[in-house]
Amino acid sequence: MTGADLVCRTLERLGVTHVFGLPGTQNVPLFEALRGAAFRTVVPTHEMGAAFMAAGYSRASGRVGVLTTIPGPGFTYALTGLAEARLDSVPILYLVGQPARGPGKRFQLQAIDQAAIAGPLIKARLDVSRIEDFPRAVAEGHRLALAGEPGPVMVHYDPALLGAETAAAVPAEAPRAGDGASGIEGITETLELLGQAKRVVIFAGQGANGAGDLVRLLAERLGAAVVTTTSARGVVAEDHPLVVQTDLRGAGGVNELVAASDLVLALGVKFSHNGAFGFQLRLPEGRLVHVDESPESLGANYRARLPIRANVGAWIEELIHRAPAAPVGPGWAPGELDARRARLAQSSVFPVEPRVAGAEPAAFFAALRAALPRETCLVTDSGLHEMLARRHFPVLAARGLIVPTDFQSMGFGLPAAIGAGLAAPERPVVLVTGDGGLAMCGLELLTAVKERVTLPILVLNDGRYGLIRLDQIRQYGHTFGVDLPALDFGALAAATGAGYAAPDEDLARAILRALDTPGPTVIEVPVGDSRAMHRARAGAQARGAGRKLLPRWLIDRLKRLR
Picture 1 (tube, rainbow, N blue to C red):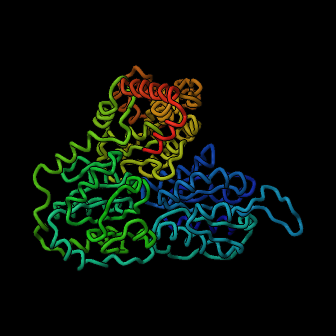
Picture 2: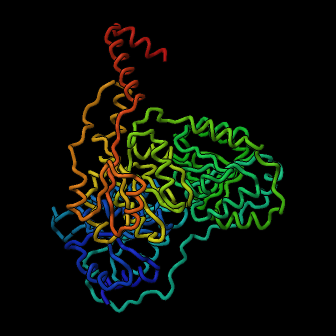
Picture 3: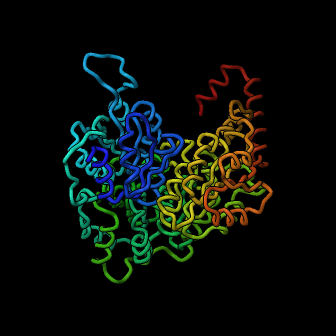
Protein backbone atom coordinates (compact mmCIF):
# COMPACT_ATOMS: atom_id res chain seq x y z
CA MET A 1 0.00 0.00 0.00
CA THR A 2 1.28 3.47 -0.90
CA GLY A 3 0.93 6.70 1.06
CA ALA A 4 -1.66 7.81 -1.49
CA ASP A 5 -3.61 4.59 -0.89
CA LEU A 6 -3.57 5.34 2.84
CA VAL A 7 -5.05 8.78 2.16
CA CYS A 8 -7.87 7.36 0.02
CA ARG A 9 -8.69 4.51 2.40
CA THR A 10 -8.90 6.99 5.28
CA LEU A 11 -11.20 9.28 3.30
CA GLU A 12 -13.42 6.28 2.53
CA ARG A 13 -13.63 5.40 6.24
CA LEU A 14 -14.62 9.00 6.96
CA GLY A 15 -17.57 8.71 4.57
CA VAL A 16 -16.22 11.18 2.01
CA THR A 17 -18.26 11.13 -1.21
CA HIS A 18 -16.42 13.71 -3.36
CA VAL A 19 -12.91 15.12 -3.71
CA PHE A 20 -12.31 18.29 -5.73
CA GLY A 21 -8.92 19.08 -7.21
CA LEU A 22 -6.44 19.05 -10.07
CA PRO A 23 -3.54 16.71 -10.78
CA GLY A 24 0.03 17.88 -11.23
CA THR A 25 3.57 16.57 -11.15
CA GLN A 26 3.73 16.43 -7.35
CA ASN A 27 0.49 14.48 -6.79
CA VAL A 28 0.44 11.95 -9.65
CA PRO A 29 0.48 9.00 -7.18
CA LEU A 30 -2.49 10.50 -5.34
CA PHE A 31 -4.56 10.67 -8.52
CA GLU A 32 -3.62 7.07 -9.31
CA ALA A 33 -5.06 6.11 -5.92
CA LEU A 34 -8.10 8.34 -6.46
CA ARG A 35 -8.77 6.48 -9.73
CA GLY A 36 -9.66 3.36 -7.75
CA ALA A 37 -11.29 5.04 -4.75
CA ALA A 38 -14.88 4.40 -3.73
CA PHE A 39 -15.77 8.11 -3.91
CA ARG A 40 -16.02 10.52 -6.83
CA THR A 41 -13.13 12.75 -7.91
CA VAL A 42 -14.14 15.99 -9.64
CA VAL A 43 -11.47 17.71 -11.73
CA PRO A 44 -12.43 21.32 -12.58
CA THR A 45 -10.58 23.73 -14.86
CA HIS A 46 -8.92 25.74 -12.10
CA GLU A 47 -7.88 25.33 -8.45
CA MET A 48 -9.91 28.34 -7.37
CA GLY A 49 -12.94 26.65 -8.92
CA ALA A 50 -12.06 23.46 -7.05
CA ALA A 51 -11.97 25.34 -3.74
CA PHE A 52 -15.32 27.00 -4.41
CA MET A 53 -16.82 23.65 -5.44
CA ALA A 54 -15.67 22.10 -2.16
CA ALA A 55 -17.25 25.05 -0.32
CA GLY A 56 -20.54 24.77 -2.24
CA TYR A 57 -20.59 21.03 -1.57
CA SER A 58 -20.17 21.66 2.15
CA ARG A 59 -22.68 24.54 2.32
CA ALA A 60 -25.38 22.42 0.64
CA SER A 61 -24.75 19.25 2.66
CA GLY A 62 -23.27 20.24 6.02
CA ARG A 63 -20.43 17.77 5.39
CA VAL A 64 -16.73 18.43 5.00
CA GLY A 65 -15.66 19.47 1.51
CA VAL A 66 -12.39 17.86 0.43
CA LEU A 67 -9.93 19.79 -1.74
CA THR A 68 -6.56 18.77 -3.13
CA THR A 69 -4.01 20.70 -5.20
CA ILE A 70 -0.34 20.65 -5.98
CA PRO A 71 1.92 23.02 -4.03
CA GLY A 72 3.12 26.29 -5.57
CA PRO A 73 0.67 27.67 -8.15
CA GLY A 74 -2.06 25.14 -7.28
CA PHE A 75 -1.81 26.28 -3.67
CA THR A 76 -1.90 30.00 -4.47
CA TYR A 77 -4.83 29.62 -6.88
CA ALA A 78 -6.83 27.93 -4.09
CA LEU A 79 -6.20 30.66 -1.51
CA THR A 80 -9.28 32.75 -2.33
CA GLY A 81 -11.51 29.72 -1.78
CA LEU A 82 -9.80 29.01 1.55
CA ALA A 83 -10.31 32.63 2.63
CA GLU A 84 -14.00 32.45 1.70
CA ALA A 85 -14.37 29.22 3.67
CA ARG A 86 -12.56 30.64 6.69
CA LEU A 87 -14.73 33.75 6.95
CA ASP A 88 -17.94 31.89 6.11
CA SER A 89 -17.26 29.03 8.59
CA VAL A 90 -17.21 26.30 5.94
CA PRO A 91 -15.46 23.01 6.83
CA ILE A 92 -12.83 22.15 4.21
CA LEU A 93 -10.17 19.43 4.37
CA TYR A 94 -7.33 20.68 2.17
CA LEU A 95 -4.69 18.14 1.08
CA VAL A 96 -1.60 19.81 -0.39
CA GLY A 97 2.05 18.91 -0.80
CA GLN A 98 4.82 20.82 0.91
CA PRO A 99 7.00 23.01 -1.32
CA ALA A 100 10.23 21.66 -2.73
CA ARG A 101 13.27 21.65 -0.47
CA GLY A 102 16.72 20.17 -0.67
CA PRO A 103 19.88 20.21 1.43
CA GLY A 104 22.28 23.02 0.68
CA LYS A 105 20.33 24.39 -2.29
CA ARG A 106 18.48 27.69 -2.55
CA PHE A 107 15.89 28.86 -5.09
CA GLN A 108 14.03 25.57 -5.28
CA LEU A 109 11.27 25.11 -7.86
CA GLN A 110 7.95 26.70 -6.76
CA ALA A 111 9.36 27.11 -3.23
CA ILE A 112 7.30 29.57 -1.20
CA ASP A 113 6.44 29.61 2.51
CA GLN A 114 3.04 27.97 2.20
CA ALA A 115 2.65 27.52 5.95
CA ALA A 116 3.05 31.25 6.60
CA ILE A 117 0.82 32.26 3.70
CA ALA A 118 -2.00 29.88 4.63
CA GLY A 119 -1.81 30.57 8.37
CA PRO A 120 -4.43 33.35 8.57
CA LEU A 121 -6.78 31.49 6.21
CA ILE A 122 -7.05 28.13 7.96
CA LYS A 123 -8.08 26.78 11.36
CA ALA A 124 -5.14 24.42 11.67
CA ARG A 125 -2.24 22.87 9.77
CA LEU A 126 -1.21 19.24 10.18
CA ASP A 127 2.23 18.37 8.80
CA VAL A 128 2.95 14.85 7.55
CA SER A 129 6.62 13.86 7.36
CA ARG A 130 6.18 10.09 7.91
CA ILE A 131 4.04 7.88 5.72
CA GLU A 132 2.39 6.13 8.68
CA ASP A 133 1.07 9.51 9.90
CA PHE A 134 -1.27 9.97 6.92
CA PRO A 135 -4.34 8.28 8.46
CA ARG A 136 -4.05 10.22 11.72
CA ALA A 137 -3.54 13.57 9.98
CA VAL A 138 -6.37 13.10 7.46
CA ALA A 139 -8.83 11.89 10.12
CA GLU A 140 -7.85 14.61 12.58
CA GLY A 141 -8.05 17.28 9.87
CA HIS A 142 -11.55 16.09 8.98
CA ARG A 143 -12.58 16.26 12.66
CA LEU A 144 -11.06 19.70 13.24
CA ALA A 145 -12.75 21.13 10.14
CA LEU A 146 -16.15 20.49 11.78
CA ALA A 147 -15.27 21.02 15.44
CA GLY A 148 -16.33 24.25 17.13
CA GLU A 149 -16.44 27.02 14.53
CA PRO A 150 -16.15 25.11 11.21
CA GLY A 151 -13.44 26.10 8.76
CA PRO A 152 -10.62 24.91 6.48
CA VAL A 153 -7.87 22.64 7.81
CA MET A 154 -4.70 21.99 5.79
CA VAL A 155 -2.93 18.63 5.72
CA HIS A 156 0.56 19.58 4.55
CA TYR A 157 2.46 16.50 3.43
CA ASP A 158 5.81 15.63 1.90
CA PRO A 159 4.95 14.76 -1.74
CA ALA A 160 7.55 11.97 -1.77
CA LEU A 161 5.39 10.04 0.70
CA LEU A 162 2.51 9.59 -1.76
CA GLY A 163 4.29 7.00 -3.86
CA ALA A 164 6.23 5.34 -1.06
CA GLU A 165 5.23 1.86 0.13
CA THR A 166 4.11 1.11 3.69
CA ALA A 167 2.64 -1.65 5.81
CA ALA A 168 0.69 0.86 7.93
CA ALA A 169 -3.03 0.21 8.38
CA VAL A 170 -6.03 2.52 8.32
CA PRO A 171 -7.89 2.77 11.67
CA ALA A 172 -10.97 0.56 11.76
CA GLU A 173 -13.24 3.32 13.05
CA ALA A 174 -13.67 6.88 11.86
CA PRO A 175 -13.27 9.56 14.55
CA ARG A 176 -16.18 11.54 15.93
CA ALA A 177 -17.20 14.54 13.83
CA GLY A 178 -17.71 16.91 16.75
CA ASP A 179 -15.48 18.00 19.59
CA GLY A 180 -17.52 16.86 22.55
CA ALA A 181 -19.23 20.16 23.39
CA SER A 182 -22.04 19.56 25.86
CA GLY A 183 -25.59 19.60 24.55
CA ILE A 184 -27.33 20.26 27.89
CA GLU A 185 -25.67 23.35 29.38
CA GLY A 186 -27.87 26.23 30.50
CA ILE A 187 -31.23 24.48 30.13
CA THR A 188 -32.52 25.27 33.61
CA GLU A 189 -31.41 28.91 33.44
CA THR A 190 -32.95 29.36 29.99
CA LEU A 191 -36.28 27.88 31.12
CA GLU A 192 -36.33 30.32 34.03
CA LEU A 193 -35.80 33.25 31.64
CA LEU A 194 -38.46 31.92 29.27
CA GLY A 195 -40.87 31.65 32.17
CA GLN A 196 -40.53 35.41 32.67
CA ALA A 197 -40.67 36.32 28.97
CA LYS A 198 -43.76 37.28 27.01
CA ARG A 199 -42.22 38.00 23.61
CA VAL A 200 -39.22 36.02 22.42
CA VAL A 201 -37.02 36.47 19.36
CA ILE A 202 -35.08 33.52 17.93
CA PHE A 203 -32.01 34.71 16.00
CA ALA A 204 -30.78 31.72 13.97
CA GLY A 205 -27.41 31.48 12.27
CA GLN A 206 -25.55 28.99 10.10
CA GLY A 207 -24.95 26.74 13.10
CA ALA A 208 -28.71 26.05 13.18
CA ASN A 209 -28.95 24.87 9.55
CA GLY A 210 -28.90 21.21 10.53
CA ALA A 211 -31.70 21.68 13.07
CA GLY A 212 -34.38 23.45 11.05
CA ASP A 213 -37.31 21.32 12.22
CA LEU A 214 -36.27 21.80 15.84
CA VAL A 215 -35.93 25.57 15.44
CA ARG A 216 -39.41 25.71 13.91
CA LEU A 217 -40.86 23.53 16.67
CA LEU A 218 -39.25 25.70 19.35
CA ALA A 219 -40.53 28.88 17.71
CA GLU A 220 -44.06 27.49 17.56
CA ARG A 221 -43.92 26.36 21.21
CA LEU A 222 -42.77 29.83 22.29
CA GLY A 223 -44.73 31.88 19.79
CA ALA A 224 -41.33 33.42 19.03
CA ALA A 225 -40.46 35.65 16.12
CA VAL A 226 -37.69 34.14 13.96
CA VAL A 227 -34.99 36.17 12.24
CA THR A 228 -31.87 34.73 10.62
CA THR A 229 -28.48 35.62 9.27
CA THR A 230 -27.97 35.41 5.49
CA SER A 231 -26.31 32.00 5.85
CA ALA A 232 -29.31 30.61 7.75
CA ARG A 233 -32.05 31.84 5.41
CA GLY A 234 -34.72 29.14 5.14
CA VAL A 235 -33.81 27.33 8.37
CA VAL A 236 -37.50 28.00 9.02
CA ALA A 237 -39.41 28.54 5.77
CA GLU A 238 -39.84 32.25 5.14
CA ASP A 239 -43.55 31.93 4.45
CA HIS A 240 -44.04 30.74 8.04
CA PRO A 241 -46.10 33.31 10.02
CA LEU A 242 -43.41 33.62 12.71
CA VAL A 243 -40.52 34.42 10.34
CA VAL A 244 -39.50 38.04 9.81
CA GLN A 245 -37.18 38.35 6.80
CA THR A 246 -34.56 41.01 7.61
CA ASP A 247 -31.75 40.37 5.11
CA LEU A 248 -30.58 43.66 3.50
CA ARG A 249 -33.44 45.51 5.20
CA GLY A 250 -31.09 47.47 7.45
CA ALA A 251 -30.55 47.11 11.19
CA GLY A 252 -33.31 49.53 12.22
CA GLY A 253 -36.22 47.13 11.92
CA VAL A 254 -34.34 44.32 13.64
CA ASN A 255 -33.35 46.59 16.50
CA GLU A 256 -36.98 47.65 16.91
CA LEU A 257 -38.05 44.01 17.05
CA VAL A 258 -35.36 43.22 19.64
CA ALA A 259 -36.29 46.30 21.69
CA ALA A 260 -39.91 45.12 21.82
CA SER A 261 -38.91 41.62 22.98
CA ASP A 262 -38.20 40.22 26.44
CA LEU A 263 -35.60 37.63 25.43
CA VAL A 264 -33.40 36.81 22.42
CA LEU A 265 -32.26 33.24 21.77
CA ALA A 266 -29.26 33.41 19.41
CA LEU A 267 -28.76 29.92 17.99
CA GLY A 268 -25.60 29.12 16.04
CA VAL A 269 -24.78 32.77 15.25
CA LYS A 270 -21.21 34.03 14.94
CA PHE A 271 -22.33 37.69 14.77
CA SER A 272 -19.87 38.50 11.99
CA HIS A 273 -20.12 41.73 9.97
CA ASN A 274 -23.01 40.48 7.82
CA GLY A 275 -24.65 38.50 10.63
CA ALA A 276 -24.70 41.63 12.81
CA PHE A 277 -25.90 44.01 10.07
CA GLY A 278 -22.54 45.73 9.79
CA PHE A 279 -22.30 45.63 13.62
CA GLN A 280 -25.25 48.03 13.86
CA LEU A 281 -27.30 45.32 15.59
CA ARG A 282 -28.16 46.19 19.21
CA LEU A 283 -28.52 43.21 21.56
CA PRO A 284 -28.94 44.01 25.27
CA GLU A 285 -26.67 41.69 27.26
CA GLY A 286 -29.30 41.10 29.94
CA ARG A 287 -31.79 39.66 27.44
CA LEU A 288 -29.46 37.56 25.30
CA VAL A 289 -28.99 33.77 25.46
CA HIS A 290 -26.29 32.73 22.98
CA VAL A 291 -25.89 29.05 22.04
CA ASP A 292 -23.00 28.03 19.80
CA GLU A 293 -20.52 25.17 19.49
CA SER A 294 -17.62 27.56 19.04
CA PRO A 295 -16.11 29.08 22.20
CA GLU A 296 -14.55 31.72 19.91
CA SER A 297 -18.01 33.01 18.93
CA LEU A 298 -19.44 33.27 22.42
CA GLY A 299 -18.93 36.82 23.65
CA ALA A 300 -16.76 37.78 20.70
CA ASN A 301 -18.87 40.75 19.58
CA TYR A 302 -21.92 40.64 21.87
CA ARG A 303 -21.83 39.68 25.53
CA ALA A 304 -24.69 37.41 26.63
CA ARG A 305 -26.44 36.86 29.92
CA LEU A 306 -26.16 33.14 29.19
CA PRO A 307 -23.30 32.10 26.85
CA ILE A 308 -23.80 28.38 26.23
CA ARG A 309 -21.35 26.18 24.37
CA ALA A 310 -23.48 23.46 22.82
CA ASN A 311 -24.65 21.85 19.61
CA VAL A 312 -27.77 23.79 18.61
CA GLY A 313 -29.87 20.76 17.66
CA ALA A 314 -29.00 18.77 20.79
CA TRP A 315 -29.59 21.82 23.00
CA ILE A 316 -33.03 22.55 21.52
CA GLU A 317 -34.04 18.89 21.88
CA GLU A 318 -33.15 18.97 25.57
CA LEU A 319 -34.87 22.32 26.08
CA ILE A 320 -38.10 21.10 24.48
CA HIS A 321 -37.91 17.84 26.42
CA ARG A 322 -37.68 19.69 29.74
CA ALA A 323 -39.99 22.59 28.90
CA PRO A 324 -43.64 22.76 30.00
CA ALA A 325 -46.13 21.46 27.46
CA ALA A 326 -47.94 24.80 27.30
CA PRO A 327 -46.48 27.71 25.31
CA VAL A 328 -44.29 30.11 27.29
CA GLY A 329 -45.96 33.53 27.45
CA PRO A 330 -48.64 34.83 25.07
CA GLY A 331 -46.23 35.44 22.24
CA TRP A 332 -46.48 38.33 19.83
CA ALA A 333 -49.82 40.09 19.41
CA PRO A 334 -51.91 39.05 16.38
CA GLY A 335 -50.91 41.12 13.39
CA GLU A 336 -47.83 42.66 15.02
CA LEU A 337 -45.31 40.54 13.09
CA ASP A 338 -47.32 41.11 9.90
CA ALA A 339 -47.02 44.86 10.42
CA ARG A 340 -43.29 44.61 11.06
CA ARG A 341 -42.81 42.47 7.96
CA ALA A 342 -44.69 45.01 5.85
CA ARG A 343 -42.53 47.89 7.12
CA LEU A 344 -39.31 45.93 6.59
CA ALA A 345 -40.35 44.98 3.05
CA GLN A 346 -40.34 48.69 2.15
CA SER A 347 -36.84 49.30 3.54
CA SER A 348 -33.55 48.44 1.90
CA VAL A 349 -29.86 49.21 2.20
CA PHE A 350 -29.89 49.36 -1.62
CA PRO A 351 -32.81 51.69 -2.44
CA VAL A 352 -31.79 52.13 -6.10
CA GLU A 353 -32.41 49.02 -8.21
CA PRO A 354 -32.29 48.25 -11.94
CA ARG A 355 -34.97 46.63 -14.06
CA VAL A 356 -34.63 42.87 -14.55
CA ALA A 357 -36.14 41.26 -17.64
CA GLY A 358 -38.10 44.48 -18.19
CA ALA A 359 -39.73 44.40 -14.74
CA GLU A 360 -39.11 45.45 -11.17
CA PRO A 361 -36.74 43.03 -9.39
CA ALA A 362 -39.50 42.08 -6.94
CA ALA A 363 -41.69 40.86 -9.80
CA PHE A 364 -38.82 38.97 -11.45
CA PHE A 365 -37.87 37.10 -8.28
CA ALA A 366 -41.52 36.43 -7.46
CA ALA A 367 -41.84 34.73 -10.85
CA LEU A 368 -38.63 32.81 -10.21
CA ARG A 369 -39.88 31.66 -6.82
CA ALA A 370 -43.19 30.54 -8.32
CA ALA A 371 -41.38 28.47 -10.96
CA LEU A 372 -39.20 26.57 -8.48
CA PRO A 373 -39.99 23.81 -5.96
CA ARG A 374 -39.89 24.76 -2.27
CA GLU A 375 -36.74 22.74 -1.60
CA THR A 376 -34.71 24.57 -4.26
CA CYS A 377 -31.22 25.71 -3.32
CA LEU A 378 -30.46 29.10 -4.88
CA VAL A 379 -26.77 29.98 -5.31
CA THR A 380 -25.47 33.42 -6.24
CA ASP A 381 -22.17 35.02 -7.08
CA SER A 382 -21.09 38.31 -5.49
CA GLY A 383 -22.60 41.47 -6.93
CA LEU A 384 -25.78 43.44 -7.52
CA HIS A 385 -27.69 40.32 -8.55
CA GLU A 386 -26.83 38.81 -5.14
CA MET A 387 -28.27 41.83 -3.33
CA LEU A 388 -31.45 41.66 -5.40
CA ALA A 389 -31.85 37.93 -4.75
CA ARG A 390 -31.27 38.33 -1.01
CA ARG A 391 -33.86 41.08 -0.80
CA HIS A 392 -36.59 39.66 -3.04
CA PHE A 393 -36.31 35.83 -3.14
CA PRO A 394 -38.14 33.98 -0.31
CA VAL A 395 -36.13 30.99 0.91
CA LEU A 396 -38.35 28.07 1.87
CA ALA A 397 -35.89 25.34 2.89
CA ALA A 398 -32.79 25.02 5.05
CA ARG A 399 -29.55 25.53 3.11
CA GLY A 400 -31.77 27.07 0.44
CA LEU A 401 -29.57 30.11 -0.21
CA ILE A 402 -25.81 29.96 -0.70
CA VAL A 403 -23.93 33.21 -1.23
CA PRO A 404 -20.33 34.29 -0.56
CA THR A 405 -21.20 35.94 2.71
CA ASP A 406 -18.27 37.49 4.55
CA PHE A 407 -15.50 37.47 1.91
CA GLN A 408 -17.68 38.25 -1.12
CA SER A 409 -15.56 36.61 -3.83
CA MET A 410 -16.60 37.18 -7.42
CA GLY A 411 -16.27 33.92 -9.35
CA PHE A 412 -17.80 31.97 -6.46
CA GLY A 413 -21.20 31.32 -8.02
CA LEU A 414 -20.79 28.76 -10.79
CA PRO A 415 -18.29 26.45 -9.06
CA ALA A 416 -20.16 26.66 -5.75
CA ALA A 417 -23.39 25.74 -7.53
CA ILE A 418 -21.67 22.76 -9.15
CA GLY A 419 -20.49 21.61 -5.72
CA ALA A 420 -23.99 22.09 -4.29
CA GLY A 421 -25.53 20.13 -7.15
CA LEU A 422 -23.15 17.23 -6.57
CA ALA A 423 -23.81 17.31 -2.81
CA ALA A 424 -27.60 17.35 -3.10
CA PRO A 425 -28.67 15.75 -6.40
CA GLU A 426 -32.12 15.10 -4.91
CA ARG A 427 -33.00 18.82 -4.75
CA PRO A 428 -33.03 21.46 -7.49
CA VAL A 429 -30.00 23.78 -7.49
CA VAL A 430 -30.27 27.06 -9.42
CA LEU A 431 -27.56 29.67 -9.98
CA VAL A 432 -28.26 33.39 -10.28
CA THR A 433 -25.11 35.21 -11.36
CA GLY A 434 -24.00 38.40 -13.02
CA ASP A 435 -22.22 38.56 -16.33
CA GLY A 436 -19.10 39.81 -14.54
CA GLY A 437 -19.10 36.91 -12.11
CA LEU A 438 -19.60 34.39 -14.89
CA ALA A 439 -16.74 35.95 -16.85
CA MET A 440 -14.41 35.07 -13.97
CA CYS A 441 -15.28 31.37 -13.87
CA GLY A 442 -17.29 30.68 -17.02
CA LEU A 443 -15.15 27.79 -18.24
CA GLU A 444 -16.31 25.75 -15.26
CA LEU A 445 -19.30 25.16 -17.53
CA LEU A 446 -17.04 22.45 -18.93
CA THR A 447 -16.95 20.82 -15.50
CA ALA A 448 -20.72 21.02 -15.10
CA VAL A 449 -21.17 19.41 -18.52
CA LYS A 450 -18.60 16.69 -17.82
CA GLU A 451 -20.14 15.88 -14.42
CA ARG A 452 -23.70 16.12 -15.81
CA VAL A 453 -24.80 18.53 -13.08
CA THR A 454 -28.36 19.67 -13.78
CA LEU A 455 -28.07 23.42 -13.26
CA PRO A 456 -30.16 26.32 -14.57
CA ILE A 457 -27.80 29.34 -14.72
CA LEU A 458 -29.63 32.68 -14.79
CA VAL A 459 -27.15 35.29 -16.02
CA LEU A 460 -28.32 38.82 -15.20
CA ASN A 461 -26.63 40.61 -18.08
CA ASP A 462 -26.10 44.37 -18.08
CA GLY A 463 -22.63 44.36 -19.67
CA ARG A 464 -21.07 45.91 -16.57
CA TYR A 465 -19.92 45.37 -13.02
CA GLY A 466 -23.38 46.44 -11.92
CA LEU A 467 -22.91 47.05 -8.20
CA ILE A 468 -19.73 49.11 -8.63
CA ARG A 469 -21.31 51.02 -11.51
CA LEU A 470 -24.27 51.86 -9.27
CA ASP A 471 -21.93 53.08 -6.53
CA GLN A 472 -20.16 55.32 -9.03
CA ILE A 473 -23.44 56.70 -10.38
CA ARG A 474 -24.74 57.49 -6.92
CA GLN A 475 -21.51 59.17 -5.83
CA TYR A 476 -20.26 60.90 -8.97
CA GLY A 477 -22.95 60.73 -11.65
CA HIS A 478 -20.63 58.96 -14.09
CA THR A 479 -18.74 55.66 -14.37
CA PHE A 480 -15.27 54.42 -15.16
CA GLY A 481 -13.69 50.95 -15.48
CA VAL A 482 -16.93 49.00 -15.09
CA ASP A 483 -17.88 48.19 -18.69
CA LEU A 484 -17.38 44.54 -19.67
CA PRO A 485 -16.36 43.25 -23.10
CA ALA A 486 -19.36 41.97 -25.01
CA LEU A 487 -19.85 38.24 -24.52
CA ASP A 488 -22.05 36.02 -26.65
CA PHE A 489 -23.55 33.73 -24.00
CA GLY A 490 -25.19 31.53 -26.61
CA ALA A 491 -21.82 30.91 -28.24
CA LEU A 492 -20.20 30.28 -24.84
CA ALA A 493 -22.87 27.71 -24.01
CA ALA A 494 -22.47 26.03 -27.39
CA ALA A 495 -18.67 25.95 -27.08
CA THR A 496 -18.82 24.23 -23.69
CA GLY A 497 -21.70 21.88 -24.45
CA ALA A 498 -24.20 23.65 -22.20
CA GLY A 499 -27.79 24.42 -23.06
CA TYR A 500 -28.94 27.97 -23.74
CA ALA A 501 -32.12 30.04 -23.43
CA ALA A 502 -32.24 33.44 -25.13
CA PRO A 503 -33.46 36.61 -23.35
CA ASP A 504 -36.80 36.58 -25.20
CA GLU A 505 -37.75 33.07 -24.03
CA ASP A 506 -40.38 32.57 -21.33
CA LEU A 507 -38.50 32.39 -18.01
CA ALA A 508 -40.63 29.74 -16.31
CA ARG A 509 -40.58 27.50 -19.39
CA ALA A 510 -36.80 27.86 -19.72
CA ILE A 511 -36.23 27.00 -16.05
CA LEU A 512 -38.47 23.94 -16.16
CA ARG A 513 -36.69 22.70 -19.29
CA ALA A 514 -33.30 23.29 -17.64
CA LEU A 515 -34.35 21.38 -14.51
CA ASP A 516 -35.30 18.43 -16.72
CA THR A 517 -32.02 18.45 -18.69
CA PRO A 518 -28.81 16.79 -17.48
CA GLY A 519 -26.01 19.33 -17.47
CA PRO A 520 -26.05 23.12 -17.21
CA THR A 521 -28.30 25.54 -19.09
CA VAL A 522 -27.37 29.20 -19.50
CA ILE A 523 -30.49 31.41 -19.30
CA GLU A 524 -29.76 34.98 -20.34
CA VAL A 525 -31.71 37.68 -18.46
CA PRO A 526 -31.37 41.31 -19.62
CA VAL A 527 -30.86 44.01 -16.99
CA GLY A 528 -31.43 47.71 -17.68
CA ASP A 529 -31.49 51.07 -15.93
CA SER A 530 -34.57 52.08 -13.97
CA ARG A 531 -35.99 55.56 -13.45
CA ALA A 532 -34.50 55.53 -9.94
CA MET A 533 -31.04 54.95 -11.43
CA HIS A 534 -31.50 57.85 -13.87
CA ARG A 535 -32.59 60.08 -10.98
CA ALA A 536 -29.57 59.00 -8.92
CA ARG A 537 -27.25 59.89 -11.81
CA ALA A 538 -28.87 63.29 -12.32
CA GLY A 539 -28.71 64.06 -8.60
CA ALA A 540 -25.04 63.15 -8.36
CA GLN A 541 -24.21 65.22 -11.43
CA ALA A 542 -26.06 68.22 -9.96
CA ARG A 543 -24.17 67.87 -6.69
CA GLY A 544 -20.89 67.63 -8.59
CA ALA A 545 -21.68 70.78 -10.56
CA GLY A 546 -22.57 72.60 -7.35
CA ARG A 547 -19.29 71.61 -5.75
CA LYS A 548 -17.37 73.09 -8.67
CA LEU A 549 -19.09 76.46 -8.13
CA LEU A 550 -18.31 76.64 -4.40
CA PRO A 551 -14.95 77.88 -3.09
CA ARG A 552 -12.65 75.24 -1.61
CA TRP A 553 -12.79 76.71 1.91
CA LEU A 554 -16.59 76.51 1.97
CA ILE A 555 -16.63 72.87 0.81
CA ASP A 556 -14.19 71.97 3.59
CA ARG A 557 -16.35 73.81 6.13
CA LEU A 558 -19.49 71.95 4.99
CA LYS A 559 -17.70 68.60 5.25
CA ARG A 560 -16.69 69.36 8.84
CA LEU A 561 -20.27 70.29 9.71
CA ARG A 562 -21.42 66.80 8.69
